[in-house]
Length: 125
Image (cartoon, rainbow, N blue to C red; front, side, top):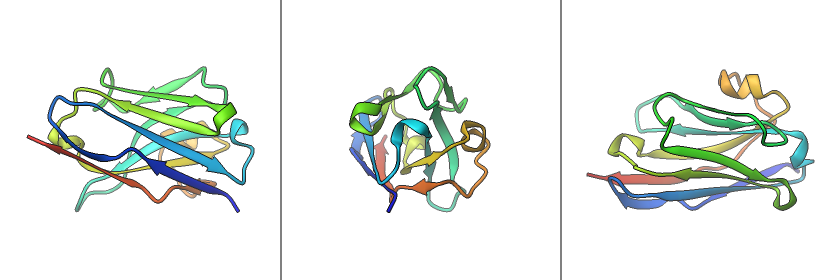
């Protein structure tokens, strides 16, 4: 079955960096747009970043633009999220998603083809 598995979360001080990875299996990874979302306690899940199937187009939420970078390696069935200059408000569970439509990911219009289980990112002040 389709499976997405995130890794790389952890605890970091404000201003620090973390790199998240999401490995896909059970799908033709290179055919799917990929996205990162996050959900903080008591808040709704929000869109963070998306990347097209070939990686040529990326889109970011305003809150992370200039600090986060999404990339992908289709040979490794992996999408990455490099997070720099982290802020306490970036604390959340980060999840990746796959869908044939990048617009659906950007618009946060579920259901998507698949979700990962999430990885916790905690930024201390």
